[in-house]
Image (cartoon, rainbow, N blue to C red; front, side, top):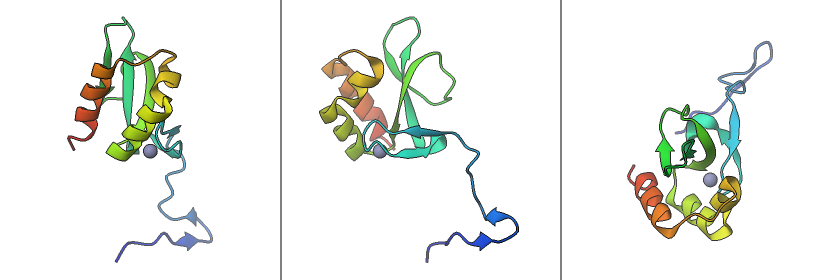
Length: 103
Ligand SMILES: [Zn+2]
């Protein structure tokens, strides 16, 4: 049985994490807690792309669910290309997909 969120009249929504920053997934385009997403970053020195585990790497970033389906959607819709304002090479997609679906 899943734990259901309960509403507490005095304290608002119990367990609310609304203070966490939200980011839009480039695949499903839904807003999610930053902590639920993976950040893909184009390195500031332009040496390539990587998955940013710390969320603090310098460079332009895009967020995506840890989900292969979202990744495929993002590739198909050009979500990454839009986020990074450039065409992402096929081999980069291959590497990123491997990292995302690894979990
Ligand atoms: Zn998604």
